[in-house]
Amino acid sequence: MSSLKKWIDDATSRGAVPVLAGKNGDMDTIGSAIALAASNPTLMACGRHMGRMAAKLCDELSAPFKKLSEKPMWPNKLGGIIIVDSASENQTGVKLPENVPICVIDHHDTCDWSFSELDLEYRMNTRSTTQIIFEYLESHHPESLTEEVRKLLLAGLISDTGRFRHADSSALTCATKILDGADFEYQEFIEKIQDQSITSSDRGAIIKALSRCSNLDAGAWNLVTTKAGIMEGRVASILIQAGAEIALVSRFRDGETRLTSRAPRSITKEGIHLGEIMQKISNKLGGDGGGHDGAAGWSGKSDVISAETAFINELASIRRNNN
Image (cartoon, rainbow, N blue to C red; front, side, top):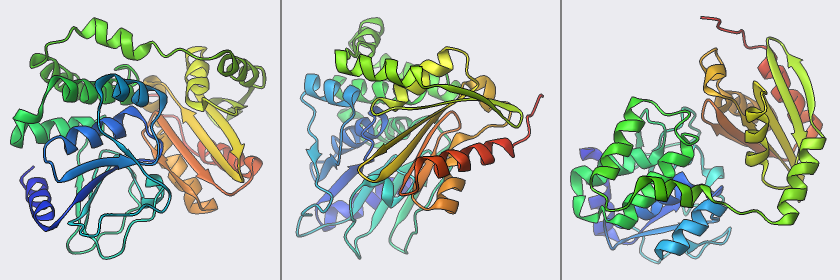
């Protein structure tokens, strides 16, 4: 943690330091960015997009977050840029300025960043980036751990562990520490963030995606595939809950194909790492791919059939670890 504090102290002494979230805008990246920015007035949480859960919680908490364009107008005097929960520059959705030191704080197994002498890569083997941020704040800025910050950190942890289905002992310990200093009821909080209402249009899109499902064997693995226009993550999670070993949901929009995949813990323990599969697809087809063992994605310019075929081929090449 000392190396991270030194980098932040040095960067903030030189000028403004944006804390940049990943373009997917999930709760882990948004919560990490806002919580870290709360520790220093020179830090500014920002990013391209907020997902539904993050937008709802940030609105309720009045949490400061600046939406960026694809080519943002950066402050004239930048001391550095911190990027949270992004395995590559493409995953930020913005063009970073040249010759500005960067600090990447992440927990993904995959990494496509290139670092120079003044840059810092701070990576820990955790189930969410908010765990890293909490440990940093607890060690160096405990006064910034307000109730609002604790809620953001806990929501990111809950989200990235799939409601603790993919949690390990360190994730559960972190959740306990976050709650130990909080003055809100966990059960009430979890009900609030899980209560994500969907519109009739969303419901129709989900039903349509489920009606398109195909079930196939890819080597030793059962794979259920479908296509969806929106809410791919939710569709994939529904397929897993319905019994699929691995779910793959594809989307094509505005000239870009996106793959979203999910797998339960029982399957990742038998040898599947979806993030590594998605990274291999990006190596073959271009684009950007990566993620966790049980939840990952890829996006690029290849057509849907080529992208799905690449995923199936990679999946089929993996042997099943029955131990």
